[in-house]
Length: 352
Ligand code: PEP
Ligand code: MG
Image 1 (cartoon, rainbow, N blue to C red):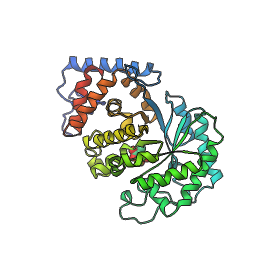
Image 2 (cartoon, helix red, strand yellow):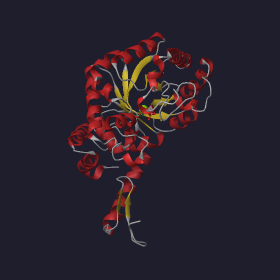
Image 3 (cartoon, rainbow, N blue to C red):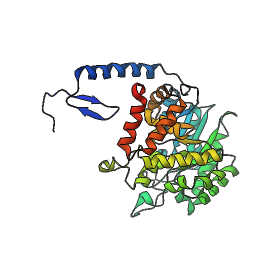
Image 4 (cartoon, protein in one colour):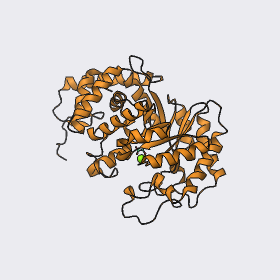
């Protein structure tokens, strides 16, 4: 509304800027540079590693068998987040163990030999499920959601774990099936979940998406075989800002240094306990933020399969040491825009 009709504007979709007085030559150069980068993304074949050979596992986020089949056509090395609850959003009653095993099996079939990380039901809040979610909570984002539902309904969780184990039993021997709980906040919850998984021969992990879990990483890690940071919720809860609110998007920005510091703290807890730390929130889909995450010590990234080549191609342009410098610049910045700008300045011509 503020720009007059017929004004020539330069829009940089990657940075999120609209410039009305852009220098024409600079704008043409930016477009030409973009084409070079797009070509590199198109040519990237994986597996992901930095310029100096530091490997980062890049995995796909999926919702069902169809999405898993699409992901199998990308360079994803496996699935880093299978959001099981998305299959049940319209179910009016809980599917039987056999029915669930069939649904999970469709995802496993798309990656017969690879790692698949299955997340147990993350019902509640923005993903209400009729047979699992409490009605009429005043504050559902802070309510009985995710793993919390199973405190009063453990058999709902154990039936799901039985179904996952049943489907996993059909997989090739070398295929890894990892299972993680959403919304873990305490080490007691982590221990409880891990025991239920181990009883069924499943590899247990937890999402780190509640700030308490990040802060208590040293006490949570010893119970688990892996963790995966959910930056969408970790940002929402760290910044006390609803992830669905467009007005608060400036706060629910994973470039917030407060969020990055919690990720760093989690990575330190992971490294101290030999527990791999992944990121499966939207942050992992941002190629430049992916460099920061690697610099903070993250071992794997999981994103929508369409984002994987962009992330992989960007990582190939930088060394681990550069990633560490970017991470340091980002966590020392006073805010999210400053963090983004400081890291872009360090990347200079290498930003995708
Ligand atoms: C997250 O919170 O970052 C996450 C990956 O889980 P979801 O977006 O499904 O809540
Ligand atoms: Mg989440």
